[in-house]
Image (tube, rainbow, N blue to C red):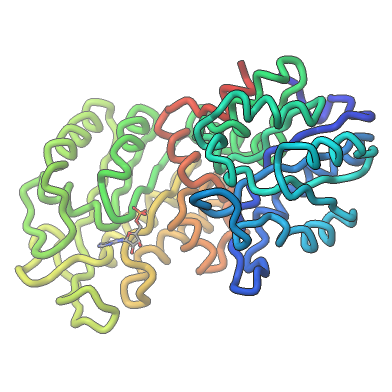
Length: 396
Ligand code: AMP
């Protein structure tokens, strides 16, 4: 594995897997350019060091071959603007035109290939397809952390054609460094705050974190499965009956590992799943029939705040309640502000996983935490302790 900062890119053609899966409106305009902005430093690094860049990505979920709405051509103007370079485009990611355009690339130039997922070979991890992509370049960079948990042709398989010349880009490097700051090198006390709808999506993370953290704070819909496991009454709250035993085991494992496992003591309950429902505070273990818990209560919010503020390392994944509805957002707001305050006082905080990222952005606190992961599924699998094919392919 090579280091992007030490590699000599002079006259090298560098095929770079980026995550350009950006949202487009009906006029094919980019509505959120975060992913494009994230990829710029790696591209600039290669260009400034005398190389040329061949960019490849997926966009959306095309079903059967090319579809205009999923064409990466829509990104060319914005990408050219952000790079200050006239980005060329190949309307097929493999084949004669791509080979000719890649062959003619001069140092400092950029070629964007058409959507990789117009070929089903991409997601199947087809080796012949990966070989055709590899034939366009001398060097391979993977900078698409968001797809690192997939063994696709462009994210993992292609690496074998560059045994000497493969490396991570800056997005990948940053993600791995920052996630490892929590998972491998977390300064104590380490606190993980897990919320969101269901235990089923989070149980592997809980199990993997139990021997790494000092505090586990549970919120969101999944707290009710734990409360039922403890013998509480939760009314109509979200419960996964088939995971009650699993919840019991997780709490037992936490106790054996001296991890403080915090289940909320109070909740905001509502008589229907609606922002305008009748609502009140209630002991979270005594929710009346006909009512459901949609947020953590103020007592829990204060306990969580105190723990977060006395932590050195904080991981947050998943909202504390139905934060999309203003009347059930308070617990999530409280946690987000407590994390921002702890960060101001020197703690390291990592926010990851779709809805907590959406929440931190909604409350405009994204610049007040240490790191916001762009990884989604990849980040969750990494925290679960799984090997990411996109990472392993570069490291091996
Ligand atoms: P996840 O994708 O598993 O992180 O779940 C995020 C979703 O969980 C958000 O859309 C929240 O609205 C939802 N959620 C959080 N708390 C609750 C709750 N108490 N009851 C039902 N849904 C919840």
